[in-house]
View 1: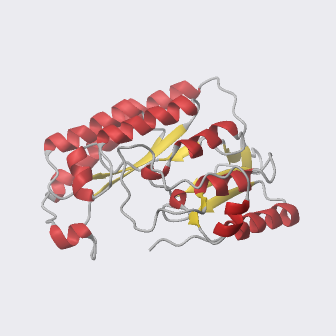
View 2: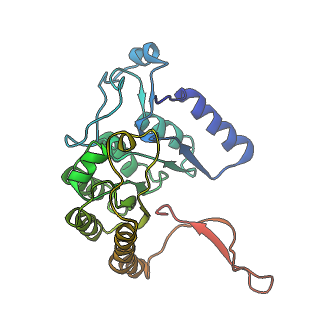
Length: 271
């Protein structure tokens, strides 16, 4: 069951770190972090003016929620992100790890309007096939995912999008695999984490399915996914960045730095 810290404690901890230690960046961390729901201050929230007592909202109508107790008043992730990012306009704010179902319009609009919220979204697709996504119980279709991508890029034009992909899930056909390839080509992810499927115990797949895709087929499909990312996506992304000016938060000396030739590494708000 998902549990959320109360919003005030997160904001106050960030405020303390900002004032006492001078931090430059904070990462809001959680499993499905953007499904955050703090209902500890419901009565206080109801007394505030102009607060909509709205229910839980997914990214779009094509997403469903697998968890119970999602309705009701309380602070959502957009509220938390708003409060933390408002502490200091120079404080960079990131979050991980999210789920694609929890990017409602209010969250995307806030990210578009608040410059210190990093323009990087991790949106783990896992597969580009609707039938595989159904077997995975992901709660969305290929079409819903692509609609969300369109919404994100419309509201946050300079956004960087990363994703996760699994090759060789139970029963995956060649056609379903090609759906993943085509999704990668269409979306043009800026970063991707790609793996061959391995059965885990105490999961829905372990209880109800068979890990029936041969290891050599999994590896071949994984290599095709990786090569697609490198050929169609990574090279294109590298070309797009040539000549662009980025604000970089320096994190320290790079691994290649030497006493004679010091170099430094850091992150833009897109990575």
